[in-house]
Length: 196
Image (cartoon, rainbow, N blue to C red):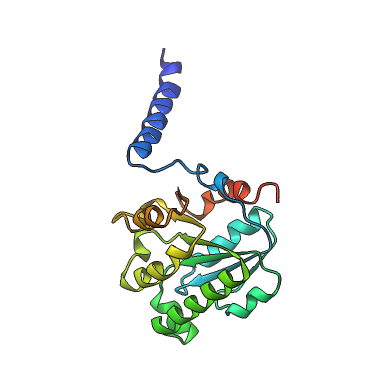
């Protein structure tokens, strides 16, 4: 009987977790990714100058998706045939210092990126992979600007303790998936870019 106890316990825990997410109105990962489609090539950039965008581009690379990565990219980078824009949101004071910019500079850059992407019909995907650590006042300004324009939101499990992302997703009818972190992105990326 001991041999069957462990798998059963795992099954029950997994089932309970899924049921718990459903009760909260959240979907297990992949449920939303299957609803939309994105096309390559992808531009991965940082919104907030944290290293989160670097982690995202590693996941995109592992998924075998054609992409370009530039943490400091300007909107004219979208002129290179880019079909999808991955905006990895999360403010870093060190990153701002290294880049020689301020939060106001980054807000303007983000606004111009959104305007250019929407004008060109480029799919915007907003990712928040920094978790609770990247949910300070600076990051929230960037989230409030970028997230409502996303066609798809992907957040880390501990990024939404206050429900900000869930509220934006609900208000704007944006599909959203929750992952453990950047290493768990591949299944979502495979679904998002399937058949294209």
